[in-house]
Image (cartoon, rainbow, N blue to C red; front, side, top):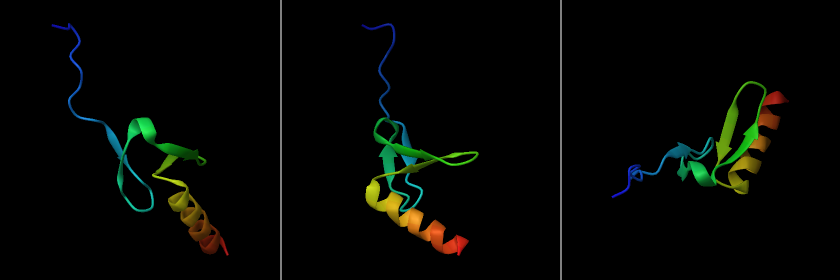
Length: 57
């Protein structure tokens, strides 16, 4: 037996836009001023960018 057992549950994060659960090991991150935002893929990231630009205008 191993002295350090493997975790049975995979740690996940929520995509900032669609809230889909994604494994921490596969999370893409884009840093903002004071926090980190995670996205499940480029489609969600690009949609988030468009929404942020519209809110600024």
